[in-house]
Image (tube, rainbow, N blue to C red; front, side, top):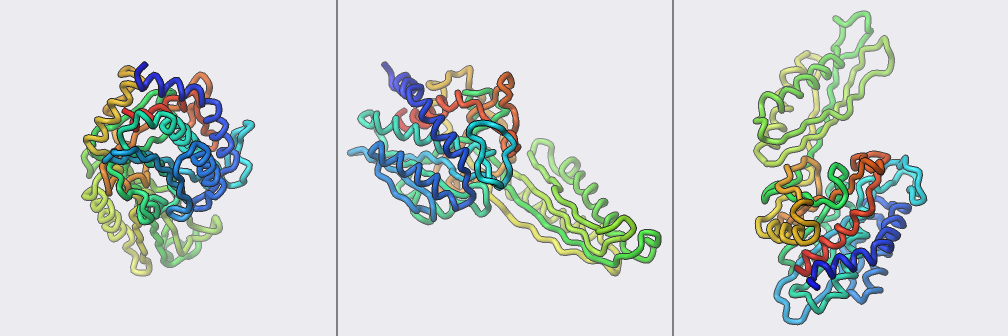
Length: 391
């Protein structure tokens, strides 16, 4: 029997226990670096299977190591542990019990699958040719993210390559999507604009600065920047997500606040968007009595997949799910991921695990209050982690 079949057999054998761990974590979500309960579960499971374990890495992260005698290379497999600061609307036996926190991004499944893979890899240690590190990271959702803290605390020390996956409900359960070498997830930036000026009575607009009109003009014009000033072959998104102004129907407000998100795949586009926003504001906020403040915060950089790690991952996927269940090359996404910081340090590959199932109503996007996943796909997720290590 070949190693892939053995991995898949083990992945099916531990499928229910993997689901149980996922649901336990799902029901008790924790935010940011406050993932103490989840980290305790991770450490407990690693130790139970005889894996060398280090806790408190990057504040609340956990690292597990399997070392092979004579091996000269070490690969890392990474999962994130934190939840989102939002309310879950699902009604299941494992619905979030913590108000204002929910695993609507699938990190509970990421953690459970990597724990399952660690168990299999340890069981098949005699077939390992490389050392393996399991990285369980806090605070992926909250910028500046937990990855920089993990790196600072030595998570990548003596690691040659790193791999990670993200569940993705827009792909059918069990399929694997891999991008071409290069940027796969985008830089995720944010901006805040405050426009202030002379308020007044709604019946006498000529005696005031109509800041709502200024803000509306800015938002409308901003939409043409991507559609008319950036190549359609260069994926870019600029979204205004908040616009706050006014206190009454008959009062022209004296201040307006605008917030938004910028998603790009390269530094030149990122710089262009930043400069273009500033120029638009200069042109629109023209009243002598009005002014603006503009702040732009760079978020996670793009996730950059390396050529060799992508080839290695493709080879593993062909064995685990078969060519017919691989989407390659999958277009780059403009979601942000702090896995990007690992890709800046060593060769890496980040990929997608399909968890969608329209027939079973698992079709809500991540970050939706009704997001859930087809847990059958966790078999392939566990097996992919193990196959990358044992391949």
